[in-house]
Length: 259
Ligand SMILES: Nc1ncnc2c1ncn2[C@@H]1O[C@H](COP(=O)(O)OP(=O)(O)O)[C@@H](O)[C@H]1O
Ligand SMILES: N[C@@H](CCC(=O)OP(=O)(O)O)C(=O)O
Image (cartoon, rainbow, N blue to C red; front, top):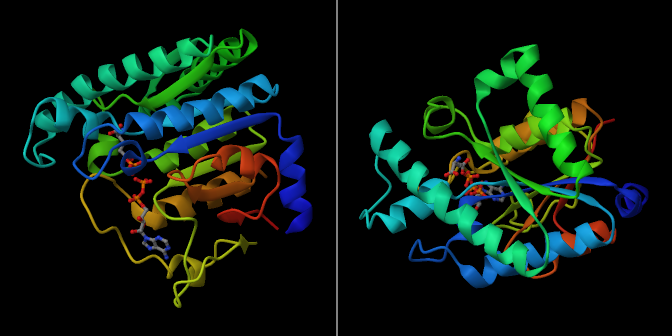
């Protein structure tokens, strides 16, 4: 494990995915301090000549708050309305915070359909590559306002592994609300060599309604990335300095590799 942790220091291209609950506080309001802390981590990586890409959830959560909805709606048109409103708000915030650090960002909204056709994949890859070459940080989300797959079936964890594979990332970091996968005793699992059935069975589901997928979708995402030889770290997005800690090779979160 130590060897792979150390190899993360050399990672050039880094995809960071941030879950909804990392981005909002307990009342569902976008947590500006935490988002600032994440932006600082990404900006630091960027200035250390890593190529940083961000897959950010949180559009629906931000829209729910902006529209003063009492809870997450269940009807698809309402989820799409929340996503349309929330995505704009999130991007305004990101653009402002990265702008303070003199970094430009570019929004890339993807759908499952894009990944299913080779032209779609090529177009998305070229756009991401061009943004990276111009030192613009891509901020990626599913295009929830027009896509039904994620809201009803899928998840941004899977989108993150598709993006990581598309751009040949050197590492995928999944930032969530726990410091990695926990075993049956509640202890952190520091290292996984294969996402086996026994590992998947550790998933206890999700306990609230802002997020989708829970730990299982992160493990599935990691298994997908592992097929492309991309190591994955599941870690606590609420911990200041977590991105640097992972890129320093520290023993943080759960590291998943393929063998
Ligand atoms: N074995 C496990 N170890 C850690 N977390 C788990 C486990 N099983 C289920 N979970 C739940 O998964 C949640 C993370 O998934 P989710 O809420 O979908 O995150 P995100 O919004 O970051 O995508 C944790 O907060 C935890 O409640
Ligand atoms: N595209 C959705 C993300 C939904 C989702 O996968 O959320 P999460 O499980 O918190 O990563 C949004 O921006 O609200």
